[in-house]
Image 1 (cartoon, helix red, strand yellow):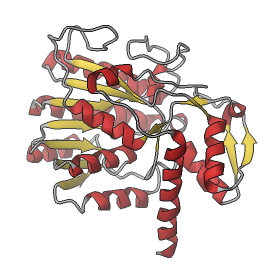
Image 2: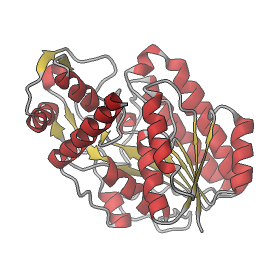
Image 3: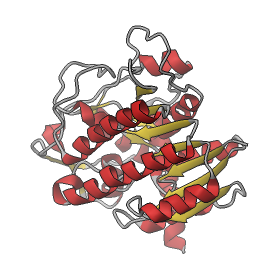
Image 4: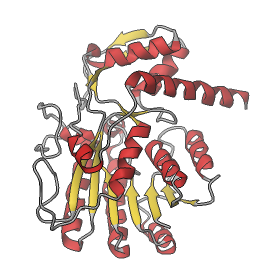
Amino acid sequence: MKKFFITGTAGFIGFHLAKLLLKEGFKVHGYDSINGYYDVNLKYARQNILLKDENFSTTKGLLEDNDKLNEVADKFQPDVIIHLAAQAGVRYSLENPRAYINSNIIGTFNVMEIAKKHKVKHLLMSSSSSVYGANINMPFKENDKVDTQLTIYAATKKSNESMAHSYAHLWKIPTTMFRFFTVYGPWGRPDMAYFKFVSAILNNKPIDIYNNGEMYRDFTYVDDLVNGIKLLVDCIPYNNEKISENDSLSPVAPFRMVNIGNSEKIKLIDFIGEIEVSLNKKAIRNYMPMQKGDVTETWADASLLQKLTNYKPKTNYKDGINNFISWYLDYYDEQIRH
């Protein structure tokens, strides 16, 4: 039975990925600090669902705690490592940049060291669409030049890509990194805009809409995203492959970068409008100027992912919003009752 070591399993994406892999019969060990960046009750609720499966085990610990990380990996002996844990949030990186260096740089280095030590079959790690920074050519392609990051969060993710490439080259660790585009869905993160919008509308509070609503995002439904990751697990990059056109495979390392997005940009105002329709309630709109470090639009070219795996996203944003709101109402109704 293939054994997956996944960091960030109490987090939004890690939870959904672990759930999918467990459903397919794999063994998963999770590693998560369960920090207080947002509601820890939500993180524990996710983890408790995973713990119902006998093939899931987990350790609470910081990525920066190299001794603990090594102890867990030595005991579990992973075949594949999927590194999703990170200090997330573009806006929070303006307030607490050091948290991003500790978790995203030092923590990621520790994970790479484990991959090297255990000679894993495949190391998969999350990057972010934020590495495209000030790029204006759309849709974003993996081989685009990415030198204009606008936040320390984006800079740490770009650093991770360079670090991972160097280790793939030096130690021949087959490595795939994925750039995520605005991920949403049930069990999501309360710091994300769509989550805040639903909460504010239900509580008759105004919602802040930046750049006066002139924003576009490639909203990617979480089930589609984790399916993309799962498909990439068996798509192991090799150094001696012939590099086809538009492939991001490195010429000097078993390393590939892959966008995972919906390949469709949605105007933020339309997304909010659909939330209003689903809730049958109008938002109190507070239009704001552009926020420091933010970008007006993101849009993925996910053709490489499709070529490698036949991946096609299945969820349009209207269905995705409805699914999220159904979960939100159920979850918080349950919290109130308890």
